[in-house]
Length: 431
Image 1 (cartoon, rainbow, N blue to C red):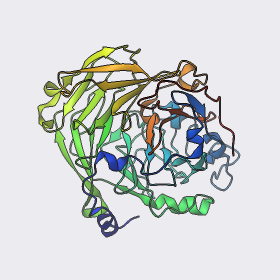
Image 2 (image 1 turned 120 degrees about the horizontal axis):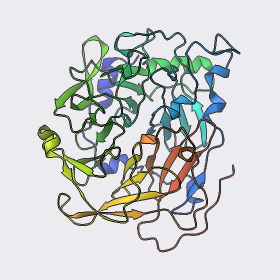
Image 3 (image 1 turned 45 degrees about the vertical axis):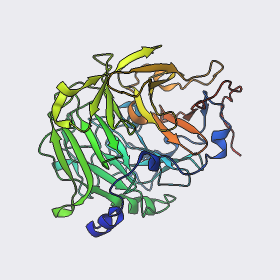
């Protein structure tokens, strides 16, 4: 476990971040440039199923029978789980996923898709002996019990950490603990052996228990680059919206502080992202309303009464719950994705975000021929933050995985001033 002094020193000079600092200061890998703007491509060279720890006799003590971490690996995606993107891990960054929740899957291993190699890696092994209930949702080896993450999983650039906004203290469903679990990507050993993966489990650290619950099922979170903190609001029955600062070291080896504010919504399957140009969090609850709502972060104490309903114009797409909703630094707009091939931009048209219109525009090229398959099938339980935006100096893409036995898809954003796009590839071969 990382010491308090080490983490404090790591972030001491990084207390504020501009939006530019989150965009990658590097050119895109060659495979990105092979994707035609406005089109999807299959880009991965292996699948999550290839790395299932239940199939590893060194990890599963019951091999070849079911492992003691009950459930099936498919739940890391199917059971209402999101993902995040770490700009500070790997040459081009790494797409990270962890998931489970309820009684669907108890494995808490972390997976990473490396944009340089285009391959998944299992960064850690799962805790082998889960048994509920468990206080605070933290196992005896100081790793977290994993809930349905929904849109409450993110990345903290200053500490190079995956951030999961809650843990699970019981497997009856909805028994979440308002404790933030943070996994440092610094100091990881290369995940090429189980010895190294077991070592990497020691990189988890935790916040104190919040006095109010911001973790009820279906909630959202967003990283605020101006204040270097996370805003989070739970789903059904939530008590509060919280602002979480992950940096301060606390007594008992915990990290971070909470400031609680009146809740913004109490509905499930929401999504949110931060707009650094206007210093607002914009969230959606398309399960119950087609409204797109903005929070003025200079007045977080106003609660739901302070939500600003943005004026929508243009070709409004089908608005469905459990969708992807991310900020694009390259396009200075929010990007929406739900299913199929349709990627849509929601962009401010004037200089006054409260009163000027925000226009919907489809970004998928007419000649696109690759369609992500996951949510087209029955039983899929949402996209959430598995739809991620990655920004390079010369290109911007969205990443998506929708099945443990399926590919990682990449969608290349159109150039801002693009007039035409070339014919797209169906998939990318290794080179």
